[in-house]
Length: 84
Image 1 (cartoon, rainbow, N blue to C red):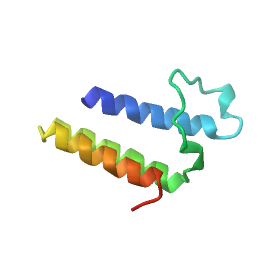
Image 2 (image 1 turned 30 degrees about the vertical axis):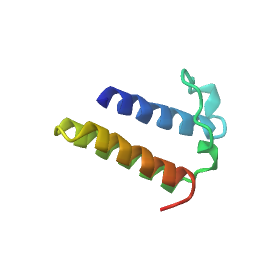
Image 3 (image 1 turned 120 degrees about the horizontal axis):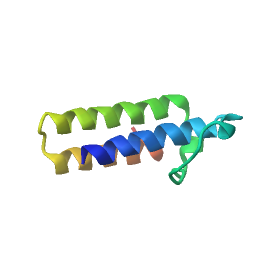
Image 4 (image 1 turned 90 degrees about the vertical axis):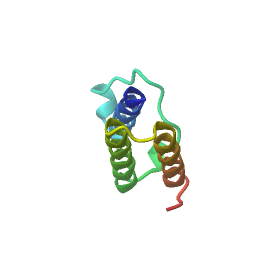
């Protein structure tokens, strides 16, 4: 599960950097783009990355994996849809 979150973190970063004008020449997308990330501002992207890093840290200290993933997915869903 930690590997899944690390992969998600890489996808978020790569997709976001690919949306920057001119960066598409330098950043290769080996994953499909995440729908809707172009509509997020830098602050929300930063919040997603922080939440992902916290979930990874919680898994490393042997937290309840299902609860961690559920909480993470709900919080990401709320960020993507404008709820806080």
